[in-house]
Image 1 (cartoon, rainbow, N blue to C red):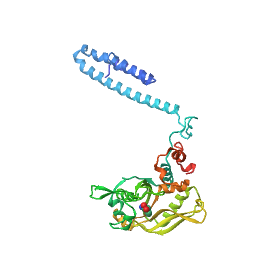
Image 2: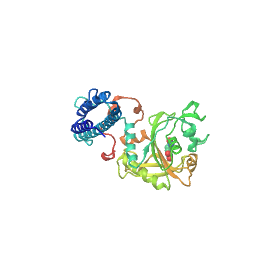
Image 3: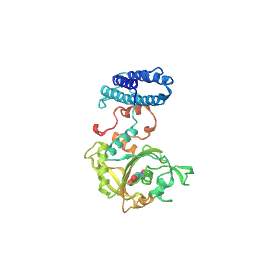
Image 4: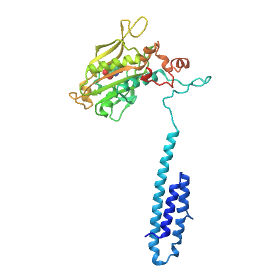
Length: 362
Ligand code: DAH
């Protein structure tokens, strides 16, 4: 049984708690009841004066009351915090659809997006809308990832074509190290690392010992890979046609699939787009320009990654990022991409405040 003074104290505390309208008022109630000279603490201190036969019972009652008041305090605190958050959410509104403010006049934007980065953003937006995810891998690869697993055995002529930079030493598995000559090793890494269905693109740096107006020892490629059940050449053609038309912004861009050879695809196809050779204009004109390599993933490559080719099929593609960037913008020379010439950079840089998005046109 709670003695009368305790019952009264409890009522008082309850009323004070209900009346506390903010966390500060709530704390004042806590101090008044449970603080050093609070009402409940006073009663606890007075326990010594209670006759011995009642002391135990009274002590237990006081402790129970203390626990109850503490619980009530917590509940009220949670309610006040929730109300405060609610009020803040109502008061603080952020309109994420507002366009960014332009730079003030006279304070020219110092930063710009490099055309390579811009193209990667655009690729990501277009393939992203088709359900592709971006993956990355190391620039220094094991020989097996860059060649062997892709069905390019030792002494295969493709190894010479790539003018590979070999690195000293070997990786943990004893493989010779190379600067990756293509982004295709990401096909292998992805298939080894996850189960299909797979839909990835892998943009990144690649390296070949080659240097002239259209070749640089370091350049960029983007790889694409789709693995699922029942994937056909039709999917490859539809996907790449849609991509090329979106990227170049020409809805009726002629696209041609021409049979070719890559060790890691069967059948393999090179993809050409229509252009006018004389004027350099993309679209009509009756001439064809090779743009990228593609094909149905070779059964041996699937098997090298532990996938049963009778169950899983897919297609892959790879293209040069500098090349499609130069074509899209009519840039004549590859070399300035890496020369850090501010005049070139200012001329070709993309606006950092207007990221690539399908809504506004790529
Ligand atoms: N890796 C090839 C190259 O660097 C490009 C390529 C061709 C990638 C066909 C592919 C593909 O995924 O299917 O020349």
